[in-house]
Image (tube, rainbow, N blue to C red):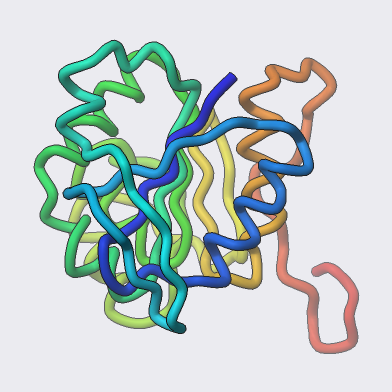
Length: 193
């Protein structure tokens, strides 16, 4: 079991990455960082991580080594991933091979542009990304987290921990995993509606 984490080379959301990595480490899930280009990725809040693979490396090699991909959001996702033809091709290939695909914050727009969210319910961070995702025939739902058929989308960094846990559940193929398709937001007094 091994995952890819797509990290924008600049402007990734530090909190998303740290929470996702914490969940993967806790569950002993190995991962590799990937982006449009190799080098030191710079986070919005000053974080730095080494990215040793680019999307083309994965496309040209045996992508069967990976069970799925998590795409980080943030401003960097919009600038680097929304128009990345290599990422879009990788997502289509992973979907064909029934790999787990997850996107958080602005990342579901890249997923929609790759065509893997067509006619599917997904969530994305509030604002212009909603309309952008819907342009590609994705069905927007204003929920914190949505997962179905090995595709996981999360609205914002506050959902990063649960988002990563759901990705792991899919990878493990846990037959007991019968979670809801949509995790509802609590209402103002703290009860699920």
